[in-house]
Amino acid sequence: MKIYVDGKEVIIRDDERNLLEALKNVGIEIPNLCYLSETSIYGACRLCLVEVDGKSIVTSCNLKPYEGMVVRTNTPEIYEIRKGILELLLASHNRDCTTCERNGSCKLQEYAEAFGIRKIRFDNVIKDGGVDDKSPIVRDNTKCILCGDCVRVCEEVQGVAAIDIAGRGFQSKVTPAFGHSLADVECVYCGQCVAYCPTGALSIRNDIDKLYRVLKSKKKVVIGMIAPAVRSAIQEEFKLDSDLFIAGRLNTFLKMLGFSKVFEVPFGADLVAYEEAHEFLDRLEKGEKLPQFTSCCPAWVKYVEEFYPTYIDNLSTVKSPQQAMGSVIKEIYSKEIGIPKEDIYLVSIMPCTSKKFEAEREEHKGVVDLVITTKELAQMIKASGIDISSLKPEPFDKPFNLYSQGGLDFGKTGGVLGTVLAVINHKVKIKNVKEEEIEKGIRLFNVELENGRNVRAMAVHSLGKAKRVLRDIKEGILNVDIIEVMACSFGCIGGGGQPYPNDSKVRQRRAKILSDMVNINPITSPQENPYLMELYEKYLEHPLSHKTHEILHTSYSP
Ligand code: HC0
Ligand code: SF4
Image 1 (spheres, helix red, strand yellow):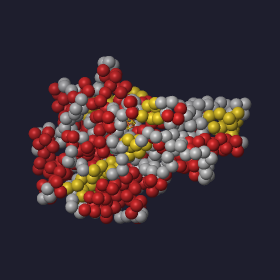
Image 2 (cartoon, helix red, strand yellow):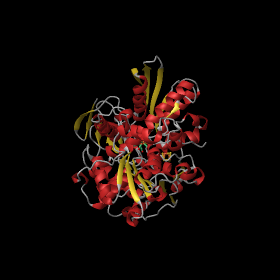
Image 3 (cartoon, protein in one colour):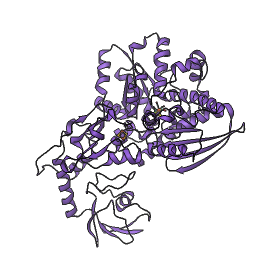
Image 4 (cartoon, rainbow, N blue to C red):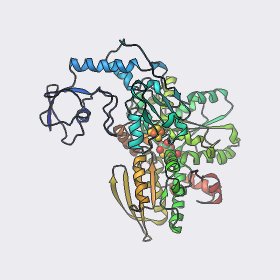
């Protein structure tokens, strides 16, 4: 379709959702603070104004483009209105920008700068509402601009609806029911509300100071482990392109900081997939607790516990790679190196906010001592003044430095399932796999085994899609044997702890970066990981052994 924008002819797709998105797709970014392509259109901020021939000044988020449309996006009138809106927002905004967690990555701050706002004509009246920091997700209502993005993401994308807008007029605020803390409601700490919040109203608990304190005291041996998805995104914080060696550089940095060893969480992913594949084959054989649900995503596990407790037994009892590997380090590796586990301080570096919650769950206490996010690690690098791209990448430490392709692929949707299938293929041989996209976010795999058996496997990303799948299972419409669920869309690469922006477009780019890293690895299945096999031989005996149940398995609470 041909339209005219600021005097220029522009070709846009016929099926664009609205003018705002159509213009974005041809490189014209209309200012806005509340538009998300992932959710319904809300139209709260009124910044996305354009002037259209025959219509005057209108919002572009709810305007369908049509053939021959004549649009002006940046007239002096529009500039003035936008500036006025920003001033009004800032007048009721807590402007402690220098100490804000979102300083430098806040859209409101970015627009205030772009529109040259130096003085605000109105008094600064800050809404009270207090700060809720009882969970890994920190809410500060004094910085909320009521765009509603968090509410829509939580309800429409995640199917949780832990927060809503309550009250009227100036007293309106985003809050969990009855003014509770997020720590006391059904929130699963996926951090997707934070990923899409344009200001500092939602942020992630920052734990860097804790880590510095431990490093400073020198009382503990600090060991780190880096999750798969961190390396797909951290370079964004430094405006660098993808870098195949970034993980090695992160290792070098952590060693310079005082870490004694740094391991690869993808090793833990191999370990989990190996154990979980055997658990699945066992359930399949017995015909019980099917479909088996993966359990490595803590937000998904909490979702099942909160909303579908009758399906708790379907969750794999294998711990997540973070916790399984943490247990191996504390229970086995500590003895190997002759250091009491109490003297080890284990830090995991994750793209995920819910991993902070997972490490603090009662049953996992004392295993992973601290979880920091991709963004927190990037912040530490920035504070050090070190140019990360100039660091020589160092190999990770043995014996947890090898992993299969799938071990790294865990970081994106389908990775866990693919690795479990790779283990099965080593044992039973897979003859054929037919893939079908049921809908965006839900893929079904018909797996034909050489022994004549068929396995129906499913990979789902975002909890809203998981909700649909669970409903279909409950109603008997869907019949599957094993399901991988990752709470964040596109998997961990889109975790709440990843850099901003963290939207679908960025996530797709991260998926490609991770695939490139996966594809250069010659180890195709966990069984080919020599250190993993050695771990079983020396300590764990065999999958589903008494020993693995002690160290690698867990239970859940309704
Ligand atoms: Fe993930 Fe994981 S893949 S959840 O996204 O399973 O956070 O990256 O570390 O534990 O391996 C996150 C990423 C992990 C775990 C692994 C799994
Ligand atoms: Fe909703 Fe996830 Fe945010 Fe909790 S962390 S409020 S579940 S989007």
